[in-house]
Amino acid sequence: MMDFLTNHSPALIVAIPLLGAFLTPLIGKINDKLRNIFVIIITIITAFLIAILINEVTTSGIVTYVFGGDKTVIGSGGSAYAIRILFEVDAMNALMASIAVILPLAAVIYSWGFMKEETGQDKYYTLLLLMTAGMLGMILTGDLFNFFVFIEITSIASCALIAFRIDKKLSVQAGFKYIVISSIGALFILFAVGIFYGQYNALNMAVVANNISYNLLDKIALVLLIGALALKSGLAPMHMWIPDAYARSPASVTIVLVGTTLAGLYGGLRVIFTIYGKQLLTVVNQIGDTIITPSILLGAIIIALAVLSIFIGVFLALKRSDFTKMIAYAAVAEIGYMFLAIGAAIITISSTDNGILMSESGFLALKAGLFHIFNDALDVGLLFLVAGAIYFKTKQTSPVTHNHKR
Image (cartoon, rainbow, N blue to C red; front, side, top):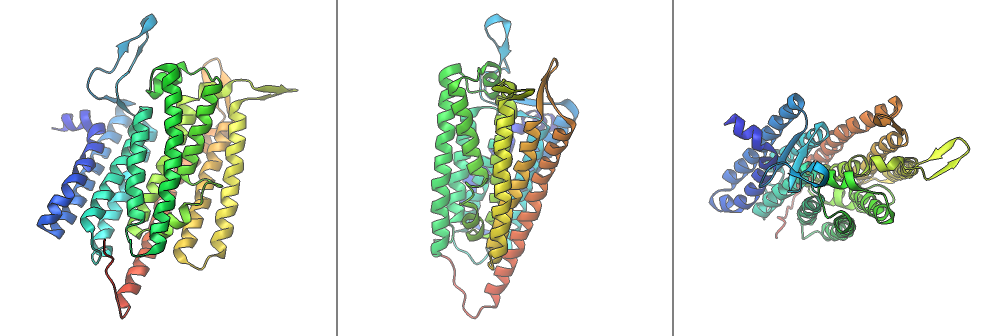
């Protein structure tokens, strides 16, 4: 049994919450408490599978799971590469997957009390599990088109949950703003996927990375992907959806929404280091002894936007008296800190006879950025749970309470 779980854990990590999402309304027809227990069990099983996968990655290295066939086929010149849909998991994926399951687990446990007076809970828990499945799919997939599919699943479920309290005008407005922004970002990603497929007849990230020539179309695809994922991550000046979405969602939704934002940031890391890593060292210009490469240009742009995010987030947080809005703007600043570390790491990339090399300071900056991803997921998520507890307590002590009908 353990061998089966170990061998198929990448697929089961997405399949279990996806199946649970479709079974939740049926179980809800039987009993509400049974439904809540079922959702918690589904999330715990997913967390257990991720723990198995993390153990496999730490002991055996990168795990590749191919759907529907062998791992490789022989290409021209004897080269071997995967052409099927696959999940590829390394230490970075494993870290992000652990974050992507801790937050929903906290959310479903918290929801038992926080959402008990709300109607439409069958829909709520179904969307929460769909959101989890989409987020995990984004993190684990090694296929560009499936990354687009999972980001769409995540966006649609997130939009519905942001606007869950449909009797509140501001919640509906926040949901509408989120789906518009997400649709624009998804369209950019789809354009980039089309560019890659049209040129290289492949959507596998490793195949694209091995064949990419960094021509004009590849540069356009890079701009589209970085723009879309910066939009999804809430990097300034594309942060406009975060304050409303974070502040107007139920607190149990916001903590998972933080995870989807960080999954978008992770997607940006994959694009930069996995797909374009080698090409970022192409010489663009040389001024005296200074060699300008795409890594320097991209790193400088990311640092500038990160600093802008920090200033906007901190300044607007200080001006707010609304507790949830204050936390939301502080979250924008936190995103800036993460991108600042990533940008600093990108600038230090250089080429050697052994391949790509990152300086010691750049590697330290990247490690700090990755650590802060985990830190941000916990501190911002917990702050919103505290805000939700205050809201819940206030509602309980209010002389008149109203259920939110869907």
